[in-house]
Length: 85
Image 1 (tube, rainbow, N blue to C red):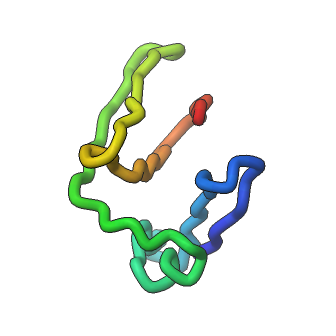
Image 2 (image 1 turned 180 degrees about the vertical axis):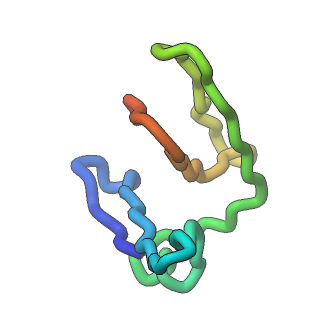
């Protein structure tokens, strides 16, 4: 797993490493110890997944103030996104 810094200090890009063979591939999408070494020690208490069929679909992740603040972990399975932080 590779953790890449961005221009925004609190935002990082996490790129899983794929391990492949003739059957296909496998990767770890979340691993607390590696993320903690990269400064991401948040406890993720909820995991959601959505599918957007039409191109150009707009979805929102909303900022929350303490005590209701949550770290966001976004995963793109296919295609591309424009993520605004």
